[in-house]
Length: 340
Ligand code: GLA
Image (cartoon, rainbow, N blue to C red; front, side):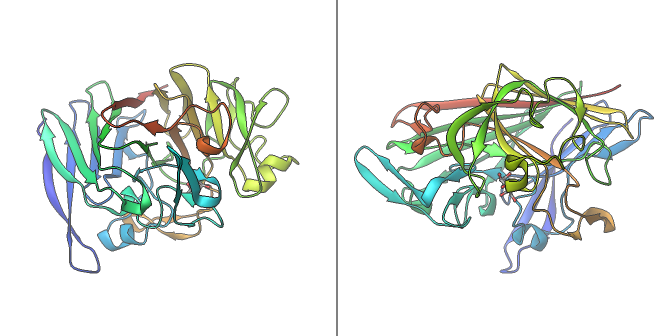
């Protein structure tokens, strides 16, 4: 079906936000804002056929402006953390904004989540694009970024990322949707299978130390489906440091995770061509107003942020986030829904 555009209100400085809605033939829909190329709603039919909004979000543009937790946003130029907010590339040192303690998080003070993107229908998909100018948030190179959102008739929500640059730079793009397949309440009863044998050890500030630890025998082992809440309160140093799960998993292959919401019967399979995925159990979510008069609380959602490993420039052996001048980045992540 054709993409429909509508007015989503204004930011506090008067700039207008536009929303685009994609609807498929199975009764599912996806709404994306030009502000932050943000997934505002994703409605998937449950076991009775009733659409359930499976992502957290807000009803107004000003709430997205305050969106400190990046609900639904496209994250860049570099998602997740860069230790001490500094990196060296081609012999030059780049100082970045320290917006997470001493570290740099999710692209800086005004990352891609706080920028306006151009939007246009591309067939039945939605293309969002912008040029991140040389020096934006102190990253080198003019970076051309395109994010294509689609929703197929078999309820697969796909995001493809394309980028190129005119000077060597760092890129690690992701989407920060907060999923709750029950459409309400916390996600501790969601069943999760995660196809990873290792995860990145964090320091006290959720920054990977460079060590990859086996999940075997730890609360991080989701190789066999279990509830997110089963071990979240375990007496484990890594969990205690982050207040729950907030760790990068080393994926074994394309299939990253399967999540199941028991109340609706909705199951979501995450697939990606990226090597890592942050499992974040909404530990820092504080109480606030969500969509349609709902209240969002801590652990009311889980994020599956497909990515290159965080802090890669400072960790030997982690896949490089450097995008060379003239090179092209292409990456795909999909979230496929069905009822079981
Ligand atoms: C990511 C981080 C978390 C937190 C959230 C946003 O998932 O890993 O530590 O910063 O983003 O609140």
